Image 1: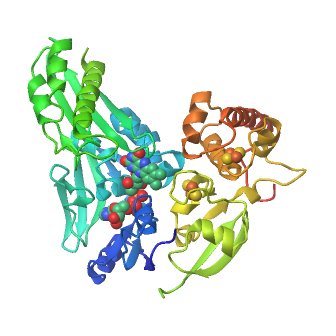
Image 2: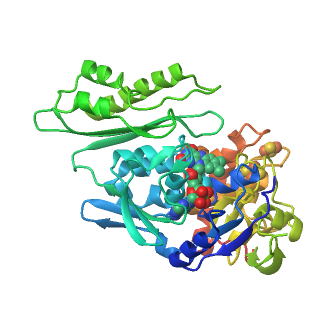
Image 3: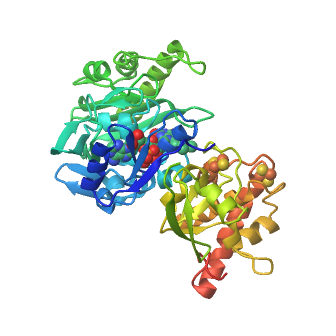
Length: 285
Length: 173
Ligand SMILES: Cc1cc2nc3c(=O)[nH]c(=O)nc-3n(C[C@H](O)[C@H](O)[C@H](O)COP(=O)(O)OP(=O)(O)OC[C@H]3O[C@@H](n4cnc5c(N)ncnc54)[C@H](O)[C@@H]3O)c2cc1C
Ligand code: FES
Ligand code: FES
């Protein structure tokens, strides 16, 4: 399978890429690792007139710590995220999720920025980004701005990112030191993408009550969502088998749960509860 | 037709330059422009890994990369691993441990295995199976492939103590 024709430009800087996006009048697309875009182009599900390659811009790569956040360049690959010492130390749940993406070859090419900008509902990083309060640094014609990931995902493959902007980095909140975290995924047996993926982070106070809890889910709904209902149910509570089971029953509450020939809506709701319950038991019991 | 783009790339230690259409996939560039047909196309949809090659030392699926993206890169294909009489340890191991039957998947499986061994020279069986998730073999049932990779890790460890460069691939092996 061969993509439709397009012209190709290698941008030498972020500013040049933004200018080229502007000049392409909405017909151009950025190319990062290409591991979502090229498959779509081979199926001709998307036919951009120009690809603006940013894949080699080294200023968009790398991980650094800034106070209570880790800032990760948009072009950092899944493999780099998975194996980076700062990520493993401060955000083990992100390292774990990045290590579950696709396979070795996919992780060598795919990037964290491309994963979020592509907004595939079945991708693994959107839930982690929501649970860790990610902030997106977006550079456009009028300069740079910081946007919360909350509200960024608008629909399948649709985000709030303006046409002529680049996601340059993503920063993630480092949870309290005594917090535990996990990402549990039920992978589609053929594609390996998430049918459900639950990211959960929780910490207990000295009396054993839940003092910090963040849960987000991708895979089951049209976009990844933050499980506010589960968090509210557990915040301040003493976790027990029963409180966790009751809270986990609310896991599908905040999403627009979808349905397809592989997994019906009912089955997806069930998976949400089961995987959320497992995650919470891991963290809190 | 979209403007062609000049691509200069080093494949198996040899420099090549060609004008290509931007939409040409790396796997087609290797097979059709450079006549290096050892790299196979199994699925064309990024699933099977038969097209796996090394790009700047990392295993990638060359059906999911444009030739223009490889400009300036070092690429290693199965042709660059070794030759009869001077096999790469991974080839030696696939031979000794029967890591193949029809051989269609083998170029990709060997390159993916080298990708693993470069990141992790002494992998456990579980790590080998995990790292080979991106290659599909319809013949072997994987058991002999796993044994071949384990054996290669041992051969490479011996090689390394002897020559200090067990992982060198491409140039002049
Ligand atoms: C076989 C296979 C299996 C996979 N399995 C999984 C999986 O299990 N889980 C998972 O989460 N993902 C999976 N993926 C997708 C993979 O994670 C992609 O790498 C990722 O979704 C996109 O990143 P990319 O760098 O390849 O982006 P590209 O494909 O280059 O780009 C994707 C989109 O994002 C835009 N974009 C890219 N970078 C930026 C930026 N910095 N700023 C603005 N826009 C940008 C592009 O214009 C394009 O529209 C899989 C992919 C393959 C091929
Ligand atoms: S041909 Fe590239 S993964 Fe199958
Ligand atoms: S040996 Fe035949 S497909 Fe692997």
